[in-house]
Length: 113
Image (cartoon, rainbow, N blue to C red; front, top):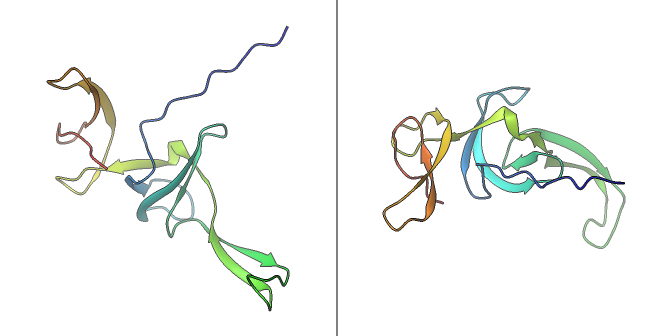
């Protein structure tokens, strides 16, 4: 019998501003372009750039070397607190309407996209 693996839920979403805490791009801040749930990875705008060799095609007639963002493990980034501008952990709480919202641990304020 095969066990079904549950999809993980992350507190970082597409559109969040994050800071990279480990790796070659450490200290870089950027916007989350994509969250890859199955692999626990994210792609951050302007961070972890790699060179990709491309063949000539309709989009790139000459081909050549293209710089693009590579995926980072989600544990290596932290959400930037809107109030202080510093990296912060994230928790979840219910707001006045009873809806679950993400809260910044540094300032205690709601994280909005």
